Image (tube, rainbow, N blue to C red; front, side):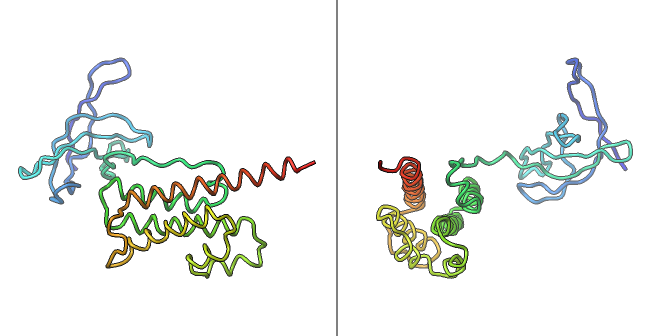
Amino acid sequence: MEYVHVKYIDSSGKESYESIQRASIKCPFCGVQMIPEFYFLCENNERGLSVFCQCTNPKCNHAFISEYKYWKDTYIFDKIAPNAAMERKQFSDIINSISPSFCEIYNQAYEAQQMNLSQICGVGYRKALEFLIKDYIMSSMEDEKKEGIKQKNLAKCIKEDISSQNVKAVAARATWLGNDETHYVRKWEDKDIRDLIGIIDLTIRWIESEIETKRLLEEMPEQ
């Protein structure tokens, strides 16, 4: 096994070197298997090392971070680190309580959007919407009726099982745009993913408002 000495700054501020495995890596940008240039390292939260590298393919030369783990008195290559942690949308306690699945699916779609995967993130938002609406309906429903909602077409759920006219109106339109993201031909050609996200956000606000209003009326009934 070959090794290479890579510079780091220790806790006292002194420049030092650590030995790591000199192994070939597949570049995350060009896909070429090569031994990168190793420039600098630091400890990471997994008790390993994060190493700043550069692809040696002259047609690429992209920089990236690789991670090394401690094994048998040395550090060996583990994986390529993500370029950065994706931003996540934070939802209120009301929405997290009603539909944690919605929050997770929405954020997966949001990650795809941040990665410029514009052709698939809309499908994720549409799925997230369905979980939000159905979980909202089932949150005030007896258990024996919930299975029917799970199997029911989303448009019919909105039309038949939501009493709030505001939630019904905005959820229906969010569904129209969400369906456009899954079909070959768009019906709403003047609308795009930003409009879908905006209407989902509006749906969330109306749901929160309905739940908060219901809670207030229950806590403070008319005397």
